Image (tube, rainbow, N blue to C red; front, side, top):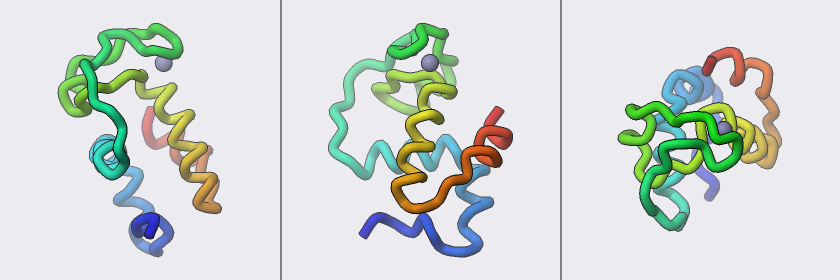
Length: 89
Ligand SMILES: [Zn+2]
């Protein structure tokens, strides 16, 4: 049960809902939730306030998070890196 990621028709919704998608993923695994960081743990770019409010305990900026998301997607056998990146910038 890895979720309904591979269903046809779910793809565009998935891309449009990138933040809620990410939020759902964070909730679906037992990640410890701490304080949101003001700056990315990877690249030290400032993390936008709305993102910090939307994702309690956020540690990464959007770009770094997307790098990690790409890894998760690839593990599901689907690599949409190109379209995903262009959608979210
Ligand atoms: Zn970053």
